[in-house]
Amino acid sequence: MADGNLIYRKEYTVHTYETDARGLGRPVALLNYLQDSAGDHAGRLGLSVIDLVKRGLTWVLSRYHVVIHRYPALGERLEVVTWPSGKHGYFAIRDFEVTDGNGGPVLSATSSWMVIGLEDKHTVKVDDVVGPAYAVAKRALEDPFASIPVPEGRESEVRFRVESGHLDWNRHVNNAVYVQWALESVAPEVLMNRRPSDIEVSYRAEAFYGDEVLSVAQRIPDGGRGPAFLHQVLHGATGAELARLRTRWS
Image 1 (cartoon, rainbow, N blue to C red):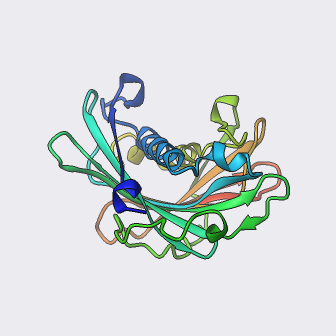
Image 2 (image 1 turned 90 degrees about the horizontal axis):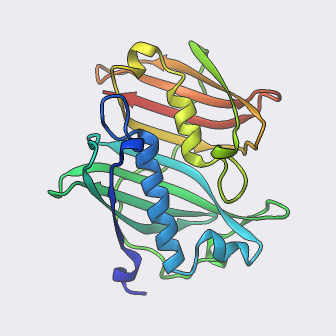
């Protein structure tokens, strides 16, 4: 398959409902652009969620690493470029670059995806689903997806309940929602005055409608580069870990 078919471009405009109190795009809006472009591209390749559901399978996001170079303002036009960048056993890697109207960098990201069976939740080897030519030898971020440390304490915590609007096609919580829950757990002086510039996520388990979740955060040494935190999103009733994150703010 030619690389031209494996590199997909899509334009977005930052809308009013996607901005924060400062008129800048919210992190969750940027993540939604990535998910939307990835879904569109997978559909063009015959590998969308809808395509896989017909085979009793679905995509599940395992890891994300997103570096936000700057936050776009209301009305800005952005271009998302995405491509599959490799396969490793049970994982398919997809990368992203987002630029503004002048070609300036806005965001770089890499992600890791698994294919699972809908009925028994078994993991399927990517090579059994995706063809051998499904990759471009280019990375937006070089990241081996090493394990994110577990927070040793809970400096702050916030509880949420899963609403119907949090659910996606698979009827579990959409991946961007976990990030929003995690960001809400940092200290107010950071949350209201700074923005996350580096977000790493490890998705561990599913949450469903009506579940209560607990988002906890612990501040960690930042090396003089701005506040940094470890996060966990936990199931409120069982304590099961749903997601683990590391964020840096600027």
